[in-house]
Amino acid sequence: MKITGLLFFIPAFCFGQLSPEINKLYDELSKSKRVESAAIGYGGSESEVYKLFVEIDKKASDKEVEYIAFNGNPVAKTYGSYSVFNRKLKILDQLFDSYLKNNEPISIIQGCVRSNSHLADELYKMVFWEKDNIKATEVYRKHKASIKTEHELSNFIQLFGAKESKWTMKEIDSVLIKFDRIVLDNPSSPQNLVELITESYFFIKRKHPEYHDKLAYFEKKYNSEEIKKYLKFSGQ
Image (tube, rainbow, N blue to C red; front, side, top):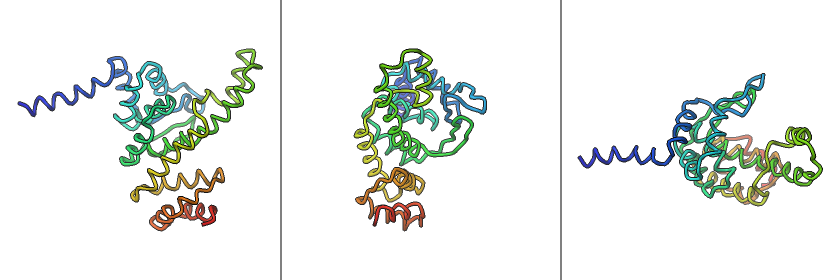
């Protein structure tokens, strides 16, 4: 009887993490087999899946967002991680570590482009490319006073990005360093994620000589040309 009671308690406890309204939206979101951008297909149709995410992001508490990011199917986790990042919640490194350990694959459609990836890879990319959004935000804030009409604002958003970043370059670099350490300190880290790190830094021409020994280990383990290229670039 005690065991039965415990088994009954566990799912009830899990569902109790979400309000009835958010749980309903979460269940709908979890039915999707792919992550979708706001507009998809050649005609730029509005994504119903993305609309669910927007609704959850608007109404869910921080604790509910954290729960979604750690639980459910990979699609729900991906959207949950978007909210965690945008809200600057203090669990990003724990979330990344969890995604790395599970290494769950995800299917993505961005506009009319389909691709396959992994949860940890996508979280890393989101943080890394936030730098572009920060630059756009700086431009927006500089010229904000000169934007007088909705049409001008619309043109600006299309040109530089859809939203203001809450992050600074220093904060993003700090998060990336934590992510890098999580990956490089784990000898079982997958090749695709280690190569993502080296490709990203090679792209922006940033050297991390302190990573040499650990990258050399992965280069040998995976016989990776991408990692070898970065090691050569960094002068090691």
